[in-house]
Length: 350
Image 1 (spheres, rainbow, N blue to C red):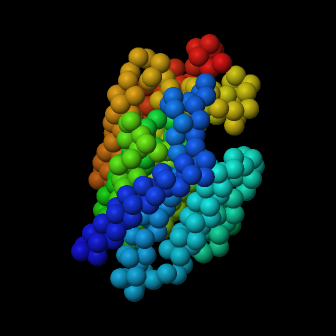
Image 2: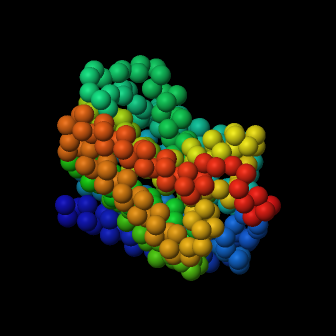
């Protein structure tokens, strides 16, 4: 426990220091985010905050694994650090030069395949309603790649307000860590707490009013690491709820992205085309303030996390019923807010 505390402290301090450094470097290099019709912020902002998140996580992770010979820098842990570095570099290049979406996607695919190469892939899926485990064989590779790329971009898409993506990711990481502890995945839990500590260091400068944005180097790295650690933990155990727990905990970015895809398909728009129909946009359009919107999304994230934790304590049938009820509530809320509806507020999206 003391070693984990020290690792988290290192992650927090490094995250704080390197985010401060990133602010200065970003301004000098011109790595800034300028306002436009789709964005909420008004002024020019440095956007290299991902440097603080990545540096803090790597420093804390190295301190932790260095003090645990049984974990060692091998297998999935080493694969996580290497692939996270590839994603971070990809995002950083995009922050600095605005590379093509296809090039950015290629970097994510390479990172995902590297992680798979180190043994980090979904080997089976457990049935949330009970029953036999479904071994995926080679199908586990494309499923893992899709999961990692999907979560990376899901966190990236919710990065629209000060403190939003960082806060949601921190809550998700802590919730997933708690569930990991209950299931006996101690290494995964430790890495999640370290990631949360590093992100808190960045959030010191990102809460409203923010003085720096995380950029793609931060959001893609956060999403990728969360997705990868979920595979390290839940995909390794034959728990009944292993299939749905990570999805519930990361429910806000996952479902917001899913609803965005459905919405754009219905409107016959390109799936990758940005719009102002995301959850945080809709809440702002309802008249809520910036801070109120972020607080509500934090509450949604905590709710989904609590559902996930409770599911681990219930019998299979009760867990399935709780899952169905939660999804119904989520979809109903999304419809009421207008996230799934089309043809609304066109003037605001122009």
